[in-house]
Amino acid sequence: MSEPTVGVVVVAAGMGARLGAGVPKAFVELRGRTLLERALEGVLGAERPAQVVVVAPASHLAAARAIAERLASEYVSVVVGGDSRQASVAAGLAALHPAVEIVMVHDAARALAPSALFDRVTRAVESSGSGVVPSLPVSDTIKRIDADARVLATVDRSDLVHVQTPQGFPRAAFEAANTLAIVEYTDDAALFAAAGYTVSVTTGEAIAFKITTPWDLRRAENLLGATAAMRTGVGIDVHAYDAAEPLWLGGLYWPDEVGLSGHSDGDALSHAICDALLSAAGLGDMGGRFGTADPQFAGAHGEVFLRATVALVVGAGYAIGNVSVQLVANTPRLGARRVEIEQHLSAVVGAPVSVSATTSDGLGFTGKGEGVAVVATALLLLVD
Image: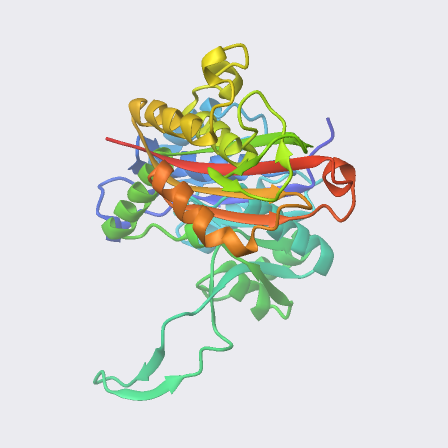
């Protein structure tokens, strides 16, 4: 395999005095894993393989190397950090392979930065040839004050952003900027710009916030806990039109509409919701739970399956968060009965159900008017 052309310097040498954990911040645990390990998972999940250099304090070199080995990546190495952040970044740069053309600098304290953010920064550096920083708009009103804490003016926030890491740069230019630096800068982009290079922004991620204080750590714990307690599922159902059958859809009868064929009442909306709920709970699918060979379900209405499915899901320890379902068909038109169908399904499921509809612009069996397709998604919450 050829050497990666992307390099990531993960800065993990800070002591994190404001966190007050008694160990360097990158080695503080967040729900059973260190901030450094979680940060590296985001790096290693990116599309492009990268050489990763972890810059750690001398006191925790062994711990950093153990984490690198546990993640089993041949491209992760560990070096000792310097007396300042810039010195630590320089130490990381010096360890990069000559093949690296794009370098990103990432703070281990932004432990929840998703892999997609690294991909976005890499692509932006490649396309622009400049330095790139992920950013978020400033939503708070900003005031300028004097030494006595008196407000002097309100600052126009329209051209202000919060910046994050990873910050990406063309390697040659970034190394040159580092050699020119004679003062300490608050971030790598400031150092790069001070050397006369261009820095642009790309869209950041709210979850890539910096863990600096005990409050930040608790926020991250809560976010991870909420994510672990959620499950999603997808359900798809397809039925052909049958002029000899009445139309039941979403648990409602639709007079003067062509019906749908099926062992039961052909209610594709209800069936797709059942499959989405069962999928999210890891309980299989409708075919396995309510097989067509079972005579008790012959002609059964969709509401029968929905109530049985809800009972299974709740019995497995989940609460239903919400369900979203979309009908792909030429007919019927849902608009006039959308509110009615949403209210009915929400009452049966015991959670909000949103319903939408579209056509396939004349393409496929739905476009030719041969039948309907329905796609549903469900969110479940694990009940403690």
